[in-house]
Image (cartoon, rainbow, N blue to C red; front, side, top):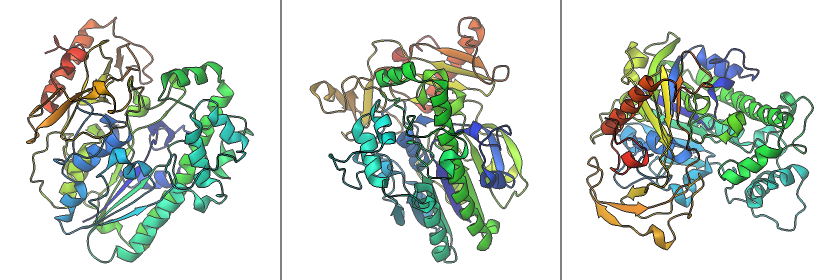
Length: 507
């Protein structure tokens, strides 16, 4: 069985007509794939944001209770190495530059072959000219974001005018070329990952004006801030609905452009007659909020708008398309791919559960509830009907646990920066995680919580999650707090997290 995994960054479920038939965003090729695939309705994030989600995918381990964004651990299994045991050639083609940053080492090195498409976001690819007079759209972004961010992106892409030069086009085209060369040479695992539709929301024509109603990126910001809270507040205090609508139009333009090139890959699967012996997975790491509730991105609290994400799977053993009910998570794709490759995982896995029986046999979900969140923020859970978003208690200690001392990326308002200052010296070393057979460093770290408000929603009665029932429904609040504690006990956590999250009484 061949396996193709397509990961599109920041793809919001509500933008896709397969999930939201009223969406104005045109995605004919995703629609085409959904019409033959199993479309999962209750698929959720786990550890957020980008690289924590990819550790779940590549190593099958949730990390948001233990550490922030960082390198793979020495004890982590590697998905490509496991799949290779089934006789598969493994290949990744990606423009997701975080894979080759210092703060995310180890994720792509285990593939047999790798193709890296350079230049996205702040990938240090082309030199910046400090004396260059930049266009107005770059200056608009500089008003609320560090100039080197958009400056690096502009240096990387300033000569591009054709659609074929942009990232999703290059990524899917490279995947098609690889299939031409290798699809007939034996079983393969092809991981295709485009950082589109991630910001900055910069697209060429015809996509720039496709949904924009005459507005221009020279008038409005195409990369609003959100990691630094004060910058986000400053932007939201001066923006207006016209600018927010323009941002959404550029996001949809990116989605439609990505869809066009995803369609080229579907055409290639047709051309090479691969559908009968190939499983195809299409998903994302998280959605992206676009100004709702005065926020952007994928930060805590993790509302369904970015936490309930698309997942579509084609498997020739069950070719009848259907909507699949039952809770699933990003981390489950690790075990799913391994089982599809005909391999049995030899190391213990605490977090990932294969979805292959759901796909091939119509079996029920292996989960009754799911737990998700961002390191240093709150904790979230849903049982499908109810969702709880529990914020942390103020001024409680937080520690990072790892077998190595590395330079993590803190993307959510660190109080004292990365692990480079005297307060960040390890305070202990030991076997804190019983599922890890190596000692780990315990390192104090400070993260400024984004929210102190806790939230409770009934998803079936309030799908937009606009009515917080935290105070008005104490019975459900207590039940969901108990559920969080039960899921934590099942998945593991550092002991101090109970006090930090205010869960000591929830048992």
